[in-house]
Image (cartoon, rainbow, N blue to C red; front, side, top):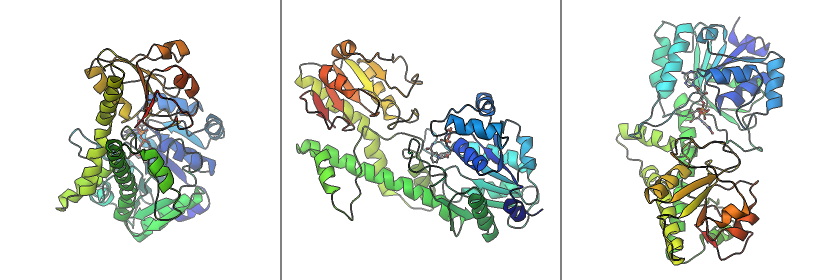
Length: 430
Ligand SMILES: NC(=O)c1ccc[n+]([C@@H]2O[C@H](COP(=O)([O-])OP(=O)(O)OC[C@H]3O[C@@H](n4cnc5c(N)ncnc54)[C@H](O)[C@@H]3O)[C@@H](O)[C@H]2O)c1
């Protein structure tokens, strides 16, 4: 049966490769729309947890996952042979940077090789991982066509960027519009039909290259604007102007201004990484993406700026970083989530330890802090807070009792302005 008809009859089988922050919510949305879905991952623990109906991703409600698993619409497997039965395959694997800041698309290539072994007529393959313009056509297409099947005629290939914002309850995988760009018009049409069948809101564009660039524009826009406001924050500090008050007042303009806020550095899997996918590719066409490089430099200097400001504030209190007991408050890269990937907390901890501070951390969302050496968890009590020399708020979480902190800490360096409702001499703002 033709894929178009199978989708219309909801007789299609769907596969999602990579059950992480992006893939698991997508798999659950497909299953909730009544589409039989098989998630494929290489990590056994994740497969076992999905099949037990247990969620390990904050944005996926345990009850919803358990329901679709018990109804039989979603299951997980590590057997890539199952791809043979799938009518559609969405790829949601990681796309990190190498140490040299070059794109690492090895996870995509490895997933695509598995798909190629199982590729058959009337299958639709969609890449959702963020990547540089041209990946779908220049890397995936030749691999898939190795077996002799032709795109647009025998099988279909498209790119649709995942735009999920972890922790955001208003905009989720389901209601964020899905930009879709196929390698041929038939590919775009079928990919659009898939998302519509899954009750999502697809936005077709003319090519996979355009769809790839859309995602990178969105994340570059954020990185550049954060870089700009970080520079303004450092400038305002030099001029003794309260940058937070400036932004708050500027944001009253009903048009032409969108507030971005300074912070201790970029984190997460997207904003610190994705713009470099674009600048890397642009370089190959002889183009230097100056805004990307500059905002990258400013944003990655922010942890050092925090250290300098903390040293300055300690100095005013006749103290120094060497030997100071310093608490890092909030180590996930943003509010309300447990994800610490690329978190600026790591850089700040490293810089403090290098200067021989005694560093501890507290984060209600993060059970253990991996890759940070010897950083003990802090018991958040008034007595312990009183024994600190400084607390640095790297990430604010709603659940934290900040009153306890303000009433007991000798010095608080607030890099997020989460203490805006408190007035106290011991608070120093970024
Ligand atoms: N996390 C976000 O907020 C977010 C938002 C938008 C886009 N993205 C992009 O989506 C992609 C996935 O990101 P993520 O945050 O979900 O990553 P993740 O690390 O949470 O999940 C990736 C999953 O893929 C699995 N995997 C790795 N190689 C595999 C392979 N060869 N076969 C099968 N499974 C494999 C991993 O075990 C993991 O479970 C990345 O390109 C990322 O940039 C992420």
